[in-house]
Image (tube, rainbow, N blue to C red; front, side):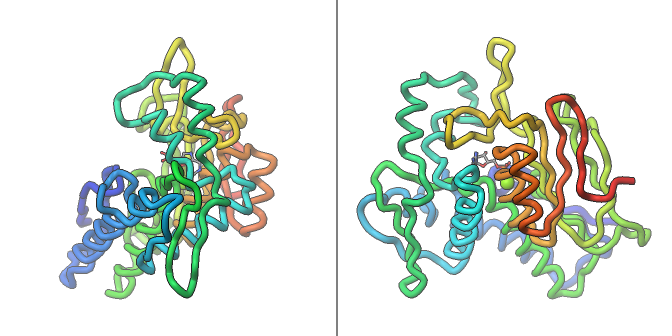
Length: 301
Ligand code: AMP
Ligand code: MG
């Protein structure tokens, strides 16, 4: 028998599934921890640390928690190594496009140009001694939507493991950690969505033990205007949804934070440069191209 806990946080539905009845309260503590991370890192909550940093852009450094400092450090690293394909200062563009807000129309090109000028990870300064974060240009703002779910999943895994839970499935809006093996002792089977079909239609299934699988795809958040699909992963260079020849990238790694950030970065970079990044981190990836081809560095059955 498995026990599933469903809760809403980080802008999505999340589930934690454990196999034994958890009498230690570990799942409950994990949920609280995720809600705490959401409070700190949400770009939508008025009181979050991320909102505070954005409000003080061009004005003053903000003292942040260990959590926010750690995730910003990692976000800065992935922004640098991906040459800005991943850019956590993408907020002016994601606000403009408004995926998930119901606006669902292509913004004016002049607005895209304006917002694009307010994106650039180089404008974040972190001070390790003072534990501060400073956006040194006004109008700049942060969106951790491509990395925070991964961190929250890693923290959930840590809390479950501390209580001796070694088999569980963590699914934060498609950001998955397959802890240990499935109840029968075989690897977990993780379905990868066919990016062009309805939710639930699988393109392939991965067998995974003790790793995270995170997918960035055109099917997560999108709208269609004049027959063109506009999705939620934005190229910081063009200001438009990234067109890199890929429909979906799944990254498989021990760290869900890394898999999350890399999947977004690789989606924007495309297959060739994306593969270089995957190799650099000794990570693994499954690509689905626009032509519908599947290319994988991970063993497929
Ligand atoms: P993911 O689903 O992990 O690929 O993350 C996509 C989310 O990250 C979007 O909904 C935005 O909030 C944000 N985002 C979009 N484009 C980028 C980008 N190029 N770099 C970093 N974050 C992005
Ligand atoms: Mg991501």
